Length: 112
Image (cartoon, rainbow, N blue to C red):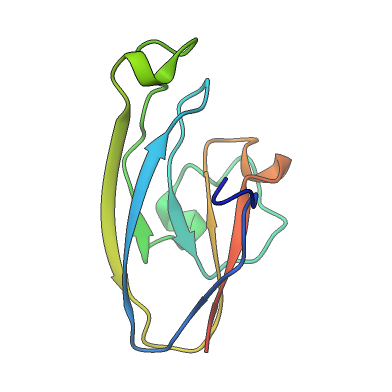
């Protein structure tokens, strides 16, 4: 969720380098990946960066906060990665943990 939006569509200018900061405040392990592959996503292949065609960006899995009941009182896990979008088109960011993207944990990136 970002500023009250859930899975917002990101519009990025072609040639831009974007630094993605991934913070897990959820109750489960999550991963952040970017792929040109459109939904629907296959729960049997999403964990494979090769099958997902997520060679653009695939950040490591993050566990939930150390104290999930109050995530701001314990350790919060985060990671980041950058990607330069050099082609216009539609890309998708998602959590490739099996079942997560299938349940709607993804959004669009429009490169214009």
